Amino acid sequence: MARFTDHLYRDGPNNPFPGIKALERRLDREIPHRLGSNEGLDMPHHALRERFGAELAELARGYGDAEALGVRSRLANQYRLPVESLLVDAGADSLIALVLRATCPSGSRVVASAGTYPTFGYFAAGQGCRISEVPYREAPGYLAPDLEALARIAQTQDARLVYLANPDNPSGHLHDEAAIGTLRDALPEDCTLLLDEAYHDFRDSAWMPEQNRPLSATVRLRTFSKAQGLAGLRIGYAIAEPEDIVLLNKVRIHYAVSSIAQEAAETVLDDSGEVEAHIQAVIARRERLARWLEALGGDVLPSYTNFVALRLPSAALAERLHGELLEAGSLVHRPPQPALGHVLRITALEDALQPGRLAALERALRA
Image (cartoon, rainbow, N blue to C red; front, top):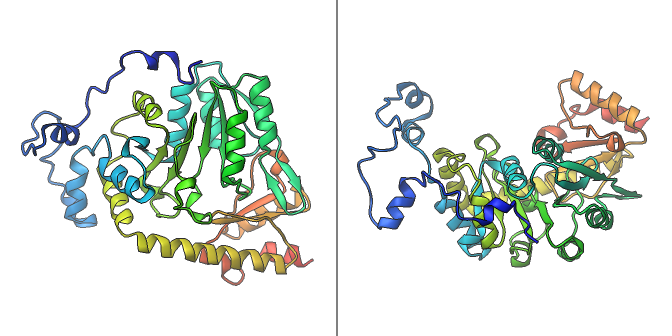
């Protein structure tokens, strides 16, 4: 059975504006006079120049490369993948919406963990999907999506899509590649596994080929918001089998990623040393934060992300501490799902380790 919506298997829809960069590649020559795209190429941008400089003003005037070939080529080189297995879009959220739009007609059943990244449920509801949620598995030192339950519900309810954040948000748990493969094999043939790997860069050996290859009937999505520090520019990418990328491109908003975001992503990809140094610094801070909380008596869950998850004895205590921290000017995250209301998620920034920054939490743990 078809995994994508039926109309995508017919000819079209075809992108009516593939962009000047794509046309230049097809013609194998530069087009110096852009007289057909109706961009504001003659806008002086004095204010932008004064505030941000001439290069940004120049990039802002024109559409970016609709195919984002510069970003995709660099990723393909780093991951040792064919460029045809990569798609660039406006961040992980946009990629979630794109995959839902391409695979799930209104009324489709989708499955996710109860309390996982809530934007998935928001977009799924907006798509008209019926959502089945599976409780997390919880034990001493363990809080993670239940892969067996996800597969079981997907089978019994004939789901079109299963969403899994890996590493997980908000627990930080990481399922290894073998577990992901077992889950994929247990899903219905016409079901897509949407693997949200927004925190992939913080796992061990993140650049190993086996952790980055396209998987059958699976879309792996990544972001430049975390390890590369480009959250405000909204850019991310998907890894999937080339035939699936073709279908996703049929419904992708082709100019959603700005020229500025693409140039920024290319720049950080070209300076992989700075990115790697940043990742290692984040991991070190994460471990310092975890050890400090544990020394206070906190129940800190293992994390493969840029945050730590602190499990408290009760949701009431977590709610009170969340409010006290916010009142003092520090915003940590408390999941809105009642079943995970006893968890606080704290980003591993140096600011979190400043003396007194988490004073309310420190007092509660010492009590």
